[in-house]
Length: 292
Image (spheres, rainbow, N blue to C red):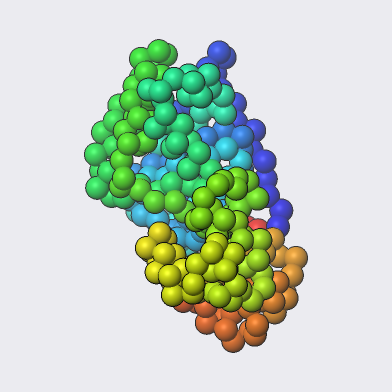
């Protein structure tokens, strides 16, 4: 799928941009940029595409996007009418990849923000309870300039970094290539799954890899991940399938077997159960994005 690389410009000697958007509908195509971005929707609704995530959005939607993460906001068809009742109002904050780079990497006071920036590479959506409180600060930031704006933005980032009222958007597998393999039993299990989910994995096989019997392994895995082993593996397979569907280079049946499912019926059932869409419907939504 073709994707646009947006070149974000900043004012001279600045690494932060805060802008007010007011237009009939979101117009920017499927794209990415090097900068981090925070989008707060004051007025609008439709579908939000972030990496392999497709979800509805509405007023109060607050999302943070990492550097080079593909995204696109698509309004419902009502916004393409002549009616003034349907319009987009949003505040967009963009800041450079090297924003306070040394401080974030080295000072302990910035550690929560460092973790937030890392998580944002899969997209972070903040729950309404948090976004409602953040709205006042984000509106204040829009009216500030210079050092005062920069320092207040750091306060906002710190609040975003410390809340648990948020979740990741892109699937676990979206950046699996960048995962580091660490020591420890769970890390060995995850490493094995990451490299073998595309084939049939027996629970007995992986249990033996970490020196456990099958029953003990199943209890351990559920306790550590909150999911059964089969559910977890299927979610990984579906996440990889989403990535392949977005790329559009393979047919649905090819993707089915590429992701480790043994037949198309099982693939369709698991995909619908986990993503809420059929594989074909999921792919068609991205095709529409490409055609716009």
